[in-house]
Image (cartoon, rainbow, N blue to C red; front, side):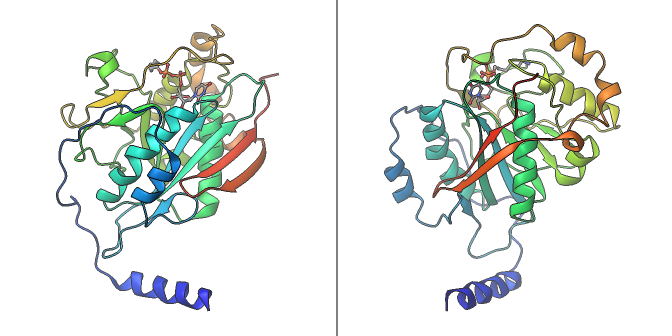
Length: 285
Ligand code: UDH
C-alpha cells in the first residue's frame, strides 16, 4: 500500500546523486509585495509540496536538510506573501526543506527568541534537519542566488534590506534572518528566552556566537538584496527598555538560559503550506 510506496521512494532517493553545490538557473527576481495572495493560488503554484510545507528535489539528493523557523502572531497577510514567494524560491534552489510557523498565543508579551527555540526543538523532532534558518515573516529575498543554506559559520542573511538602504544599520546587527547548523545552534544553547517585547534577543544571540568562539558570515550584499514589508510596531511587542541591561550579562546566562531551559505548552497542525506550531510560552512573569 501507501507505506510501501513511500518506503520504496525513500530507498530510491538515497541512490540518486548529490545535488550540485550551486543550483542551476538562478538570478535576480522581480519581487512586488502583494498583500492579497490567495492560499489556493499558492497551492496551485506549488503542486509538489508535501504536508507541513515540506519539499525536496526530485532528481538529486540535497546536501543540507533545512528547517525554516518563522516567529509569528497576527501577520496573516505577511505570511501569505512570504509563502507565495518563498516556496518557489526554495524549490528553485533544490532545497530539502520544511517551513515551521511558530505562533504565540494572544494576550502575552511577544518573545521572538523563545519562539525560535520552540521552532528548533519541534523541527528537530520532525526530521533530521542539519540547518536551521530563523527568519522574520516580512523579509523577501530579491535574488535566487541568495542561497538559503547554512555555511561554515553562523550566517546573518538580512544584511542588505531595502528598509536600511541595503546597508548594515550597525556592524554587529544579527536580526531579521540568521542561519545556523544544528551543531552550532546547540553549542550556543539557542536564543535567550528572557527577552520579552521588542528588541535585544538578536544582539544577545550575536554575543553568544562570539562567546563560544564562532565567527559570523554574511552573503554578498548585492546578491542578498531583500525587501521588507513595512508595518507598524505590533501591539504586545512593545520595548520594555530592559534589553541593554540583559545583554550586558549575556555571557552569564549562556549555559542556563536557552534550549536548556525551554518550557512551553504546544499544539502542532500540519497545513499544506507549513507546519503551524501554536505555543503558550508564558508572559515573562
Ligand atoms: N512578529 C509577529 N507578530 C508580532 C510581532 C512580531 O509575527 O506581533 C514576528 C514577525 O515574524 C516579525 C518578527 O517577529 O517579522 C520581528 O518583528 P518586529 O516587528 O519586532 O521586527 P521589525 O520588523 O524589525 O520591526 C526591525 C528591523 C530589525 C532591526 C534590528 C535591531 N536590532
